[in-house]
View (tube, one colour):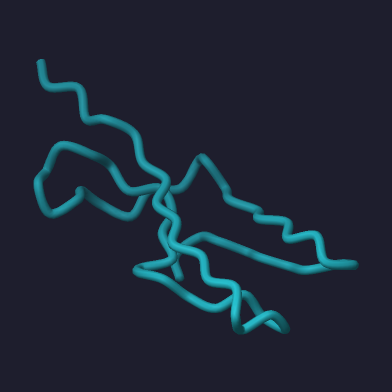
Length: 62
């Protein structure tokens, strides 16, 4: 995972992402990647629960 912290407390999943970070362009070059699970992953302690998350911003071309 890139730039994602997940924790479960009393069956509540909390996700923490630093929106100031960047990890390069997407494969299409249209978006700047901020955070990603890089596919579907199990939630710790709840392996039957899966999450797939991408956070990005559009690239503004001048």
